Image (tube, rainbow, N blue to C red):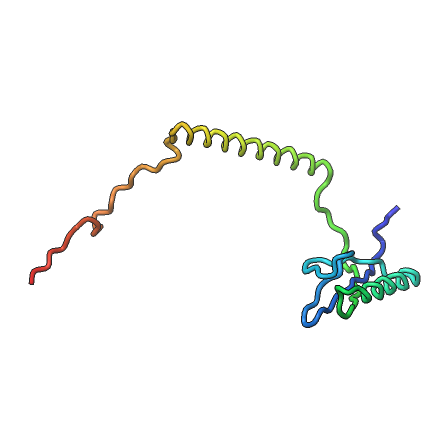
Length: 139
């Protein structure tokens, strides 16, 4: 059964003075995301409006507003279970490699060993460099 057929939702906004916040469950000062409720059938609309009214009586809230959200796009593929398992394996391998490199670097630093790759050889100065040259001014 497809439980994603609902395409109309409602979200509540807590208008607290000049600021507006999403209502996200029991947190009415969310800056990032709202809690959404189905808003298609007569029963869903009635229940959603009752929830909004209940939010309005909380001491933490100011005026409560609502916005209706409609799903307009079609679902698109993000990742399959097979791809997810492959990604997880790669991430675990990368993590183990980084941990091993960190341990090696820690051991080297404790022992005072620096590999040739970690140090840069001194670069020769360009011929037109003024560094190290003194200009004598006579008065």
